[in-house]
Image: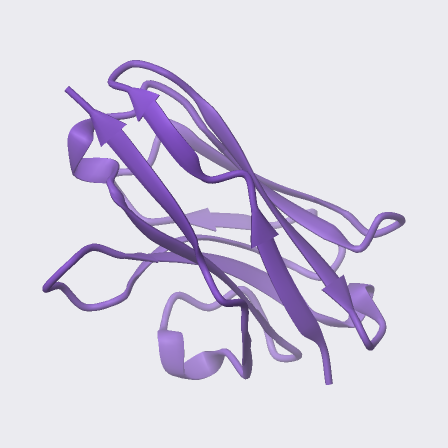
Length: 122
């Protein structure tokens, strides 16, 4: 099993940037593909980005050219750099892990963090 803890969320003005971090513990981090998802109030949880075990393959939802996912296996951490933030990016952001691959679907992920709130003001 792996435990995931997100951090780095907060309140930011439109056009600003945030970097989310997700620290993993409890198992071999490099064995897991990692994903970032988000959930806005009243909406379903949706895919943002994913990265392969080694970090050599990344995937993004079509509208997220402003975001970059990365990982540091030596630090057991995955990151989501978010630039040019918009009010519609306001959501709880979750990281997730699986031992299969950098998939887009929530049901492909076995482990989830508790989420971190990102609020973008206009």
